[in-house]
Length: 297
Image (tube, rainbow, N blue to C red; front, side, top):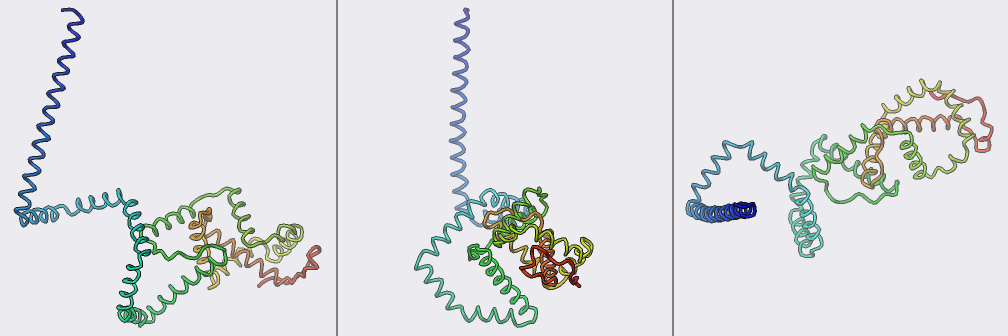
């Protein structure tokens, strides 16, 4: 047998094997379709037995069922959230839906008022309600002061809140370089419009030296900062820093390197500003600041 004949024989064997494989797959597919139809017909004829089997399996495999549900949720999380937001947007744009929603709220106004009154009936409930309202108003005022868009009316889901908390925690743990911190300081000066602070470096340096001498810098300054942070105003400053960090993330700006460090920096500015007020340096005396003044308490 020549090489050409041997090659043709091997090719024919491969063709025959492939034909047998395809025929076997067709038989298996036909059998699977027939079996699915048989199982479906049996399930439709015996719904009680199907439910009993499903309940028995769930009772024995609760953890597996939860794991399957979690995996399915995380696989389709973004798709489901996108579809839900699109559906909510369509509903809000539908006049009939808005009318039905308003009618539903109007019909339940007494129920909602009763729930609110019951919640605020205790001193603890009243305090919690006032704290929530004050926090919302504080956020709105802060956003308006920073020139940011108003607080969105969208209710953050648990997953979105967890994601924001993770971003804040990551920003708090992040170690920033001096160039990044300088960029944040430039942005802060731009927001506050402190252009004059840039143009009077000599007076600024002289004033800072005088204040540092009064405060026995840095020991007494650090003590004054710690004392300020322990006051109600200091706790409010901590809350403002947290809200500003959230606002920065929402508008796409870089987060603060550390929330605690940012709070201490702002507290130090407050302490130094009060020291400047105590020093009573007149604008005309900026070029030659006096050498003596009162120290802060």
